[in-house]
Length: 118
Image (cartoon, rainbow, N blue to C red):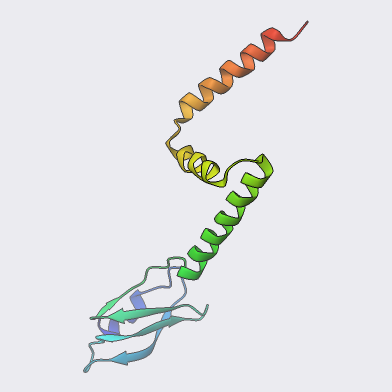
């Protein structure tokens, strides 16, 4: 990356300007370094390429996994069911077609409405 092209780059999180915090390279070329933003986020420059991807950190993903595990355990206790079975059912939910769910839901509601006394 060229140091003169720095004004083109923006922080993907807040759209603010980036500053070159650290750099290695000769002359205009920045081969490795760090771009930083006023919002506190920093982005590495490796092999002359700035990595301006703003993914959630691994800590965030780990926190979500721990929360998921706690919720699955809670659901198993709540349902008084085997945790492994609840995990399997939860994993199969995304594979369930919305139309089949909607269809079974509609069928259940129509059967309820016909069985109720008028």
